[in-house]
Image (cartoon, rainbow, N blue to C red; front, side, top):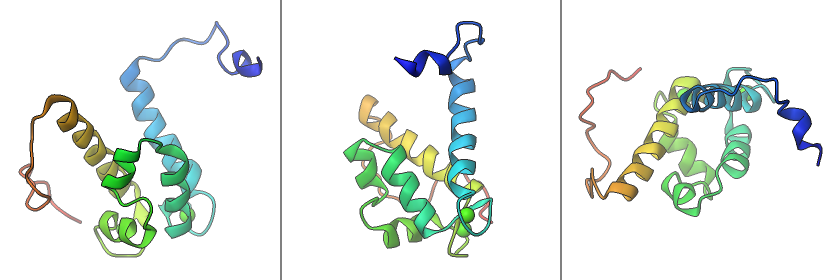
Length: 122
Ligand SMILES: [Ca+2]
Ligand SMILES: [Ca+2]
């Protein structure tokens, strides 16, 4: 089992939120770096992220992972044809909310429309 080499016992274990945060950034940069602009996910890159980094069918269906055109349309809030980090974060946080709702039964059926958080769009 080679895996141990990646997690040497001397490495300080990161706290869970540390891991989540660094993962989000690392995953985004890793895929965004593939082609074109290094800090934007184009359609191909987005497809790869969704295919490889999300396994739960429920979450996949939440962002239309099977229909990359639709997924891109949904995630690309500023309509420049690519997903930037801000848009990616929004996607992750939407998925987290989705999972939260499923777990708690809260936040409910309200369909995507006006979001109460009142943050400004780009
Ligand atoms: Ca790119
Ligand atoms: Ca965009």
